[in-house]
Length: 169
Length: 169
DNA sequence: TCCCGCATGTTGTCACTGCCAACATCACCC
DNA sequence: GGGTGATGTTGGCAGTGACAACATGCGGGA
Image (cartoon, rainbow over all chains, first blue to last red; front, side):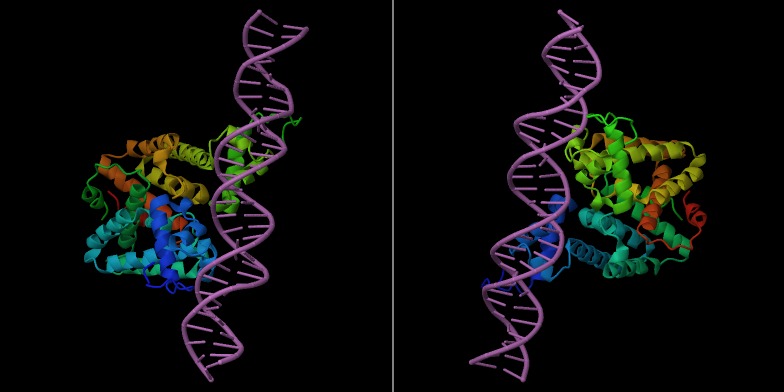
Protein backbone atom coordinates (compact mmCIF):
# COMPACT_ATOMS: atom_id res chain seq x y z
CA UNK A 1 0.00 0.00 0.00
CA UNK A 2 2.58 2.52 1.04
CA UNK A 3 5.49 1.35 -1.03
CA UNK A 4 5.67 2.65 -4.57
CA UNK A 5 5.61 -0.70 -6.27
CA UNK A 6 3.54 -3.59 -5.02
CA UNK A 7 6.15 -6.28 -5.05
CA UNK A 8 5.45 -9.93 -4.58
CA UNK A 9 7.10 -9.69 -1.21
CA UNK A 10 5.57 -7.26 1.16
CA UNK A 11 8.74 -6.57 3.08
CA UNK A 12 7.19 -5.14 6.22
CA UNK A 13 4.47 -7.66 6.68
CA UNK A 14 4.92 -8.49 10.33
CA UNK A 15 4.38 -4.99 11.70
CA UNK A 16 1.68 -4.44 9.08
CA UNK A 17 -0.12 -7.53 10.36
CA UNK A 18 0.14 -6.35 13.94
CA UNK A 19 -1.22 -2.96 12.99
CA UNK A 20 -4.09 -4.49 11.06
CA UNK A 21 -4.78 -6.80 13.97
CA UNK A 22 -4.94 -3.96 16.45
CA UNK A 23 -7.27 -2.01 14.20
CA UNK A 24 -9.53 -5.03 13.93
CA UNK A 25 -9.37 -5.61 17.66
CA UNK A 26 -10.55 -2.08 18.29
CA UNK A 27 -13.20 -2.15 15.59
CA UNK A 28 -14.67 -5.62 16.03
CA UNK A 29 -13.48 -6.95 19.34
CA UNK A 30 -11.43 -10.08 19.84
CA UNK A 31 -14.10 -12.29 18.28
CA UNK A 32 -13.81 -10.48 14.96
CA UNK A 33 -10.06 -10.78 14.96
CA UNK A 34 -9.66 -13.65 12.54
CA UNK A 35 -6.35 -14.44 10.97
CA UNK A 36 -7.93 -14.18 7.55
CA UNK A 37 -9.43 -10.79 8.28
CA UNK A 38 -6.02 -9.60 9.47
CA UNK A 39 -4.49 -10.85 6.24
CA UNK A 40 -7.15 -9.02 4.24
CA UNK A 41 -6.47 -5.87 6.24
CA UNK A 42 -2.81 -6.09 5.34
CA UNK A 43 -3.63 -6.84 1.71
CA UNK A 44 -2.08 -10.28 1.55
CA UNK A 45 -3.38 -13.78 1.03
CA UNK A 46 -5.07 -15.69 3.81
CA UNK A 47 -2.01 -17.78 4.54
CA UNK A 48 0.71 -15.17 4.52
CA UNK A 49 0.48 -14.53 8.27
CA UNK A 50 1.73 -18.05 8.93
CA UNK A 51 5.17 -16.98 7.71
CA UNK A 52 5.37 -14.65 10.71
CA UNK A 53 3.11 -16.17 13.36
CA UNK A 54 2.76 -19.83 14.12
CA UNK A 55 -0.93 -19.53 14.85
CA UNK A 56 -3.70 -17.10 15.54
CA UNK A 57 -2.94 -17.33 19.23
CA UNK A 58 0.71 -16.47 18.58
CA UNK A 59 -0.38 -13.32 16.77
CA UNK A 60 -2.60 -12.35 19.70
CA UNK A 61 0.26 -13.02 22.09
CA UNK A 62 2.59 -10.81 20.05
CA UNK A 63 -0.01 -8.06 20.06
CA UNK A 64 -0.44 -8.35 23.82
CA UNK A 65 3.32 -8.34 24.34
CA UNK A 66 3.57 -5.15 22.34
CA UNK A 67 0.87 -3.73 24.59
CA UNK A 68 2.89 -4.57 27.69
CA UNK A 69 5.94 -2.89 26.20
CA UNK A 70 3.94 0.26 25.55
CA UNK A 71 2.51 0.11 29.06
CA UNK A 72 5.99 -0.23 30.52
CA UNK A 73 7.15 2.80 28.56
CA UNK A 74 4.19 4.83 29.79
CA UNK A 75 4.92 3.82 33.37
CA UNK A 76 8.60 4.68 33.05
CA UNK A 77 7.68 8.14 31.83
CA UNK A 78 5.44 8.82 34.83
CA UNK A 79 6.93 10.18 38.07
CA UNK A 80 6.21 8.58 41.45
CA UNK A 81 3.78 5.92 42.53
CA UNK A 82 0.70 8.12 42.17
CA UNK A 83 1.82 9.23 38.72
CA UNK A 84 2.30 5.63 37.64
CA UNK A 85 -1.12 4.72 38.95
CA UNK A 86 -2.64 7.44 36.85
CA UNK A 87 -0.56 6.45 33.83
CA UNK A 88 -1.73 2.85 34.25
CA UNK A 89 -5.36 3.93 34.31
CA UNK A 90 -4.84 6.26 31.39
CA UNK A 91 -3.33 3.48 29.34
CA UNK A 92 -6.21 1.13 30.09
CA UNK A 93 -8.76 3.84 29.29
CA UNK A 94 -7.02 4.85 26.08
CA UNK A 95 -6.65 1.29 24.76
CA UNK A 96 -9.46 -0.72 26.34
CA UNK A 97 -9.51 -3.46 23.73
CA UNK A 98 -5.76 -3.97 23.90
CA UNK A 99 -5.84 -3.88 27.68
CA UNK A 100 -8.54 -6.54 27.74
CA UNK A 101 -6.50 -8.68 25.40
CA UNK A 102 -3.43 -8.31 27.62
CA UNK A 103 -5.27 -9.51 30.69
CA UNK A 104 -8.08 -11.44 29.06
CA UNK A 105 -8.95 -15.07 29.14
CA UNK A 106 -7.96 -15.80 25.56
CA UNK A 107 -4.28 -15.87 26.28
CA UNK A 108 -2.61 -18.04 28.84
CA UNK A 109 0.62 -16.22 29.59
CA UNK A 110 2.22 -19.48 30.61
CA UNK A 111 2.32 -20.78 27.06
CA UNK A 112 3.87 -17.66 25.56
CA UNK A 113 7.28 -16.91 27.07
CA UNK A 114 7.71 -13.62 25.21
CA UNK A 115 4.38 -12.44 26.55
CA UNK A 116 5.26 -13.39 30.08
CA UNK A 117 8.56 -11.56 29.74
CA UNK A 118 6.94 -8.37 28.49
CA UNK A 119 4.37 -8.49 31.28
CA UNK A 120 7.04 -9.02 33.91
CA UNK A 121 8.98 -6.08 32.59
CA UNK A 122 5.98 -3.77 32.94
CA UNK A 123 5.34 -4.96 36.47
CA UNK A 124 8.92 -4.49 37.54
CA UNK A 125 8.66 -0.84 36.58
CA UNK A 126 5.66 -0.51 38.84
CA UNK A 127 7.19 -2.12 41.88
CA UNK A 128 10.46 -0.26 41.47
CA UNK A 129 9.04 2.93 42.91
CA UNK A 130 7.14 1.54 45.90
CA UNK A 131 8.38 1.93 49.45
CA UNK A 132 7.34 -1.51 50.67
CA UNK A 133 6.17 -4.64 48.94
CA UNK A 134 2.68 -4.93 50.35
CA UNK A 135 2.01 -1.31 49.54
CA UNK A 136 3.17 -1.72 45.97
CA UNK A 137 1.04 -4.80 45.48
CA UNK A 138 -2.00 -3.12 47.01
CA UNK A 139 -1.59 -0.08 44.80
CA UNK A 140 -1.07 -2.19 41.73
CA UNK A 141 -4.04 -4.44 42.47
CA UNK A 142 -6.26 -1.46 43.14
CA UNK A 143 -5.32 0.25 39.92
CA UNK A 144 -5.59 -2.98 37.97
CA UNK A 145 -8.99 -3.68 39.46
CA UNK A 146 -10.30 -0.23 38.61
CA UNK A 147 -8.98 -0.53 35.08
CA UNK A 148 -10.63 -3.91 34.62
CA UNK A 149 -13.97 -2.82 35.99
CA UNK A 150 -13.91 0.27 33.83
CA UNK A 151 -13.03 -1.69 30.72
CA UNK A 152 -15.93 -4.07 31.38
CA UNK A 153 -18.42 -1.29 31.97
CA UNK A 154 -18.97 -2.11 35.64
CA UNK A 155 -17.49 1.12 36.92
CA UNK A 156 -19.88 4.00 37.62
CA UNK A 157 -19.17 6.93 35.37
CA UNK A 158 -19.54 9.58 38.03
CA UNK A 159 -16.81 8.44 40.38
CA UNK A 160 -13.94 10.77 41.09
CA UNK A 161 -10.96 8.50 40.78
CA UNK A 162 -8.87 10.31 43.35
CA UNK A 163 -11.51 9.73 46.00
CA UNK A 164 -11.00 6.02 45.50
CA UNK A 165 -7.26 5.99 44.95
CA UNK A 166 -6.63 7.68 48.28
CA UNK A 167 -8.45 4.92 50.12
CA UNK A 168 -5.48 2.65 49.79
CA UNK A 169 -2.38 3.50 51.72
CA UNK B 1 -28.60 -39.91 30.03
CA UNK B 2 -29.99 -39.96 33.50
CA UNK B 3 -33.66 -40.29 32.68
CA UNK B 4 -34.93 -43.78 32.17
CA UNK B 5 -36.25 -43.35 28.66
CA UNK B 6 -34.55 -41.26 26.07
CA UNK B 7 -37.47 -39.30 24.76
CA UNK B 8 -37.39 -37.17 21.68
CA UNK B 9 -37.67 -34.18 23.93
CA UNK B 10 -34.94 -33.82 26.44
CA UNK B 11 -37.01 -31.90 28.95
CA UNK B 12 -34.22 -30.35 30.95
CA UNK B 13 -32.02 -29.26 28.14
CA UNK B 14 -31.31 -25.70 29.19
CA UNK B 15 -29.66 -26.51 32.53
CA UNK B 16 -28.01 -29.53 30.94
CA UNK B 17 -26.47 -27.28 28.29
CA UNK B 18 -25.23 -24.85 30.92
CA UNK B 19 -23.69 -27.68 32.90
CA UNK B 20 -22.01 -29.10 29.81
CA UNK B 21 -20.79 -25.64 28.90
CA UNK B 22 -19.24 -25.08 32.30
CA UNK B 23 -17.53 -28.46 32.19
CA UNK B 24 -16.11 -27.61 28.77
CA UNK B 25 -15.06 -24.18 29.95
CA UNK B 26 -13.10 -25.70 32.79
CA UNK B 27 -11.62 -28.47 30.69
CA UNK B 28 -10.79 -26.66 27.46
CA UNK B 29 -10.96 -22.96 28.18
CA UNK B 30 -13.24 -20.49 26.45
CA UNK B 31 -11.79 -21.22 23.02
CA UNK B 32 -12.87 -24.86 23.19
CA UNK B 33 -16.35 -23.91 24.22
CA UNK B 34 -18.11 -24.36 20.91
CA UNK B 35 -21.86 -24.54 20.70
CA UNK B 36 -21.58 -27.83 18.92
CA UNK B 37 -19.31 -29.30 21.56
CA UNK B 38 -21.78 -28.21 24.20
CA UNK B 39 -24.57 -29.92 22.28
CA UNK B 40 -22.49 -33.08 22.03
CA UNK B 41 -21.83 -32.90 25.76
CA UNK B 42 -25.55 -32.76 26.42
CA UNK B 43 -26.23 -35.54 23.93
CA UNK B 44 -28.36 -33.54 21.52
CA UNK B 45 -28.02 -32.43 17.93
CA UNK B 46 -25.84 -29.52 16.95
CA UNK B 47 -28.76 -27.14 16.58
CA UNK B 48 -30.79 -27.96 19.67
CA UNK B 49 -29.09 -25.24 21.75
CA UNK B 50 -30.67 -22.62 19.51
CA UNK B 51 -34.05 -23.43 21.05
CA UNK B 52 -32.73 -22.14 24.37
CA UNK B 53 -30.02 -19.63 23.46
CA UNK B 54 -30.11 -17.18 20.62
CA UNK B 55 -26.41 -17.53 19.93
CA UNK B 56 -23.18 -18.82 21.31
CA UNK B 57 -22.61 -15.48 22.98
CA UNK B 58 -26.01 -15.67 24.64
CA UNK B 59 -25.06 -19.02 26.13
CA UNK B 60 -21.82 -17.57 27.45
CA UNK B 61 -23.72 -14.64 28.88
CA UNK B 62 -26.15 -16.96 30.65
CA UNK B 63 -23.25 -18.93 32.07
CA UNK B 64 -21.59 -15.75 33.29
CA UNK B 65 -24.85 -14.52 34.78
CA UNK B 66 -25.17 -17.77 36.69
CA UNK B 67 -21.63 -17.19 37.93
CA UNK B 68 -22.58 -13.76 39.21
CA UNK B 69 -25.57 -15.22 41.02
CA UNK B 70 -23.35 -17.76 42.71
CA UNK B 71 -20.86 -15.06 43.60
CA UNK B 72 -23.63 -12.94 45.10
CA UNK B 73 -24.76 -15.89 47.20
CA UNK B 74 -21.23 -16.47 48.44
CA UNK B 75 -20.89 -12.81 49.34
CA UNK B 76 -24.21 -12.80 51.18
CA UNK B 77 -23.07 -15.72 53.28
CA UNK B 78 -19.87 -13.95 54.34
CA UNK B 79 -19.89 -11.58 57.32
CA UNK B 80 -18.45 -8.09 57.13
CA UNK B 81 -16.41 -6.31 54.51
CA UNK B 82 -13.24 -8.28 55.18
CA UNK B 83 -15.16 -11.54 55.09
CA UNK B 84 -16.72 -10.63 51.79
CA UNK B 85 -13.34 -9.73 50.39
CA UNK B 86 -12.06 -13.13 51.31
CA UNK B 87 -15.18 -14.80 49.91
CA UNK B 88 -14.70 -12.91 46.65
CA UNK B 89 -11.11 -14.09 46.37
CA UNK B 90 -12.09 -17.62 47.29
CA UNK B 91 -14.71 -17.66 44.58
CA UNK B 92 -12.27 -16.43 41.96
CA UNK B 93 -9.67 -18.98 43.04
CA UNK B 94 -12.16 -21.85 43.13
CA UNK B 95 -13.66 -21.12 39.70
CA UNK B 96 -10.94 -19.37 37.71
CA UNK B 97 -12.35 -20.20 34.29
CA UNK B 98 -15.81 -19.02 35.20
CA UNK B 99 -14.45 -15.92 36.85
CA UNK B 100 -12.48 -15.04 33.75
CA UNK B 101 -15.55 -15.55 31.62
CA UNK B 102 -17.56 -13.26 33.90
CA UNK B 103 -15.05 -10.45 33.53
CA UNK B 104 -13.39 -11.48 30.30
CA UNK B 105 -13.20 -9.73 26.99
CA UNK B 106 -15.52 -12.12 25.19
CA UNK B 107 -18.62 -10.67 26.70
CA UNK B 108 -19.69 -7.09 26.54
CA UNK B 109 -21.95 -6.67 29.52
CA UNK B 110 -23.70 -3.83 27.78
CA UNK B 111 -25.27 -6.07 25.18
CA UNK B 112 -26.65 -8.61 27.66
CA UNK B 113 -29.12 -7.03 30.07
CA UNK B 114 -29.55 -10.15 32.15
CA UNK B 115 -25.82 -10.36 32.61
CA UNK B 116 -25.57 -6.74 33.65
CA UNK B 117 -28.39 -7.30 36.11
CA UNK B 118 -26.73 -10.31 37.70
CA UNK B 119 -23.44 -8.46 37.96
CA UNK B 120 -25.12 -5.45 39.51
CA UNK B 121 -26.79 -7.67 42.06
CA UNK B 122 -23.47 -9.15 43.15
CA UNK B 123 -21.94 -5.70 43.44
CA UNK B 124 -24.79 -4.34 45.47
CA UNK B 125 -24.17 -7.05 48.05
CA UNK B 126 -20.60 -5.87 48.32
CA UNK B 127 -21.48 -2.22 48.69
CA UNK B 128 -24.22 -2.97 51.17
CA UNK B 129 -21.70 -3.54 53.94
CA UNK B 130 -19.39 -0.63 53.18
CA UNK B 131 -19.51 2.62 55.10
CA UNK B 132 -19.57 4.83 52.01
CA UNK B 133 -19.55 4.51 48.26
CA UNK B 134 -15.92 5.34 47.62
CA UNK B 135 -14.87 2.85 50.25
CA UNK B 136 -17.00 0.13 48.70
CA UNK B 137 -15.63 0.79 45.25
CA UNK B 138 -12.07 0.82 46.56
CA UNK B 139 -12.57 -2.48 48.35
CA UNK B 140 -14.20 -4.03 45.34
CA UNK B 141 -11.54 -2.80 42.92
CA UNK B 142 -8.75 -3.97 45.19
CA UNK B 143 -10.20 -7.44 45.56
CA UNK B 144 -11.06 -7.64 41.88
CA UNK B 145 -7.55 -6.59 40.96
CA UNK B 146 -5.98 -9.20 43.20
CA UNK B 147 -8.27 -11.87 41.79
CA UNK B 148 -7.39 -10.93 38.24
CA UNK B 149 -3.67 -10.84 38.85
CA UNK B 150 -3.82 -14.17 40.61
CA UNK B 151 -5.82 -15.75 37.80
CA UNK B 152 -3.23 -14.58 35.28
CA UNK B 153 -0.31 -15.81 37.34
CA UNK B 154 1.06 -12.34 37.98
CA UNK B 155 0.55 -12.45 41.72
CA UNK B 156 3.51 -13.58 43.87
CA UNK B 157 2.67 -16.78 45.67
CA UNK B 158 4.24 -15.82 48.96
CA UNK B 159 2.10 -12.79 49.71
CA UNK B 160 -0.05 -12.84 52.81
CA UNK B 161 -3.35 -11.61 51.52
CA UNK B 162 -4.35 -9.99 54.78
CA UNK B 163 -1.33 -7.74 54.69
CA UNK B 164 -2.65 -6.33 51.44
CA UNK B 165 -6.35 -6.36 52.21
CA UNK B 166 -5.86 -4.25 55.33
CA UNK B 167 -4.38 -1.49 53.22
CA UNK B 168 -7.84 -0.37 52.23
CA UNK B 169 -9.76 1.80 54.65
C1' DT C 1 -61.95 -39.19 23.01
C1' DC C 2 -59.96 -37.07 19.26
C1' DC C 3 -57.13 -33.81 17.12
C1' DC C 4 -54.45 -30.07 16.35
C1' DG C 5 -51.27 -26.19 17.77
C1' DC C 6 -46.88 -25.29 19.13
C1' DA C 7 -42.70 -25.83 21.77
C1' DT C 8 -38.83 -28.69 21.25
C1' DG C 9 -35.37 -31.32 18.78
C1' DT C 10 -33.40 -32.99 14.00
C1' DT C 11 -31.38 -32.94 9.45
C1' DG C 12 -29.52 -30.18 5.75
C1' DT C 13 -26.95 -26.43 4.27
C1' DC C 14 -23.89 -22.23 3.76
C1' DA C 15 -20.19 -18.98 4.49
C1' DC C 16 -16.33 -18.57 7.21
C1' DT C 17 -12.35 -19.96 9.95
C1' DG C 18 -7.74 -22.08 11.37
C1' DC C 19 -4.37 -24.74 9.58
C1' DC C 20 -1.73 -27.98 6.42
C1' DA C 21 0.50 -28.96 1.82
C1' DA C 22 2.22 -27.81 -2.54
C1' DC C 23 3.66 -24.32 -5.54
C1' DA C 24 5.33 -19.50 -7.17
C1' DT C 25 8.33 -15.54 -6.78
C1' DC C 26 12.11 -12.87 -5.54
C1' DA C 27 16.40 -11.23 -2.93
C1' DC C 28 20.84 -12.29 -2.01
C1' DC C 29 25.39 -14.37 -2.22
C1' DC C 30 28.97 -17.27 -4.33
C1' DG D 1 24.61 -15.92 -13.69
C1' DG D 2 22.68 -19.66 -11.21
C1' DG D 3 20.95 -21.76 -7.15
C1' DT D 4 19.02 -21.45 -2.49
C1' DG D 5 16.11 -20.11 1.09
C1' DA D 6 12.80 -16.83 2.88
C1' DT D 7 8.41 -14.92 1.81
C1' DG D 8 3.66 -15.08 -0.37
C1' DT D 9 0.03 -17.65 -3.09
C1' DT D 10 -3.32 -21.13 -4.36
C1' DG D 11 -5.86 -25.20 -3.02
C1' DG D 12 -7.96 -27.98 0.22
C1' DC D 13 -9.91 -30.03 4.64
C1' DA D 14 -12.35 -30.40 8.96
C1' DG D 15 -14.85 -27.80 12.25
C1' DT D 16 -17.93 -23.81 13.52
C1' DG D 17 -22.01 -20.49 14.03
C1' DA D 18 -26.21 -19.62 12.12
C1' DC D 19 -30.34 -20.12 9.10
C1' DA D 20 -34.20 -22.99 7.05
C1' DA D 21 -37.15 -26.74 6.69
C1' DC D 22 -38.87 -30.75 8.71
C1' DA D 23 -40.13 -34.29 12.53
C1' DT D 24 -42.02 -35.32 17.03
C1' DG D 25 -45.09 -35.51 20.74
C1' DC D 26 -47.20 -32.94 24.86
C1' DG D 27 -51.24 -30.52 26.29
C1' DG D 28 -55.43 -28.11 25.76
C1' DG D 29 -59.91 -27.44 23.68
C1' DA D 30 -64.15 -29.65 21.02
